[in-house]
Image (cartoon, rainbow over all chains, first blue to last red; front, side, top):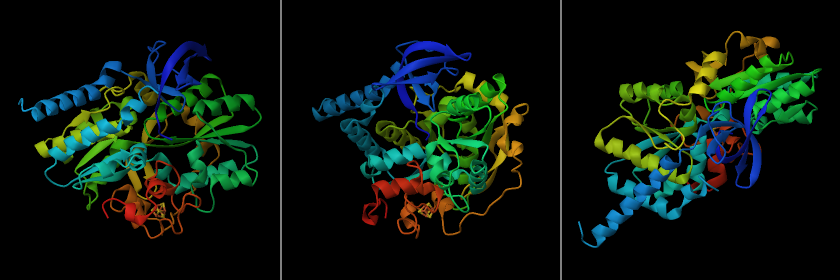
Length: 84
Length: 368
Ligand code: SF4
């Protein structure tokens, strides 16, 4: 039950005084409460848990893990070619 | 799907595993705190990718598993009342109470409903002004902001027929309980990324310092977990004990300020009993005044209800990493997901259920 699912914010609206959004989860649209990430804009991804957005996903940070692996792979290749 | 499939690549997983293998010079025991991580580790057989000297220990971070039996009994008592609509996350319906579970109450005619969000329970209370709607507010810090908002919204809307059976639990006191246990074998932690997305990392620094354990705030996809292990092993091998964030795409060091402000307004720390572990001081949240009017325990006078856990379930030892699920004599014999004896056999995030699902044959179990 603790899963957080990344969804893409499609549009914003308000209900009963709460900021809300429609978000897209791999083709499935769901309503998400934005009370805890009111700064989010359409097109951004949020992490959603039990109907609430709990964090705006940072695109640049998301790339880091792959960047590191790429560098690692390049270093390994260089090593294999005897360049180090 | 973005931010999901790209974190499941086999080639990258192999790269991380290779990196971990090269860094590891001695045996290390690393506890993943969160049940969602436990599930991913078993589902994707991540433990099999790791060198033998790295042992992953499954921690207490499944709210379904640690909700105390007397809370289940209270839920069952409430759900059986004719005026009550009892709303719960689906996982809780099969958790055994002293005599039965919520599913049994439902089949006996109790009005038990599965909700996806606590706001669904608020909506039900508006639709049914003649009924009492009770929401089973369980979960760790991840779920607490949503549950807090349900109570705040009920107050704003002036709903007198909504209440919450609150059984919130907190991660840091549980880590201390694990570390204080005399037979603790944990060298480092993968902390729960979603919890820290809300709470930030400040409260973890003193734990890392006092106990000399590295804590890496880690996500839930296979590559997140492998990178978290790599970061934890690097700290252990270098003799460091710091708090680091692997899950930086979702976790800021300060947490989520809007959620934190709301949590402070709605909840106060209380002693909480953990199923299989026992009471831990200041390890849970309950409603603070003026929101106590929405406390189902108070509204329905359930303070006196307590219960003993069945002795044959060794969930406490499993949740603290002293025993593995298949080492329980009941595992797969008298305890299965269809007929669970203890709570960790219920939710997919429970260690026993995850082992049952992915490692039924004892020979498959790693580290045996
Ligand atoms: S296998 Fe069943 S009885 Fe044994 S510890 Fe797990 S939940 Fe309890």
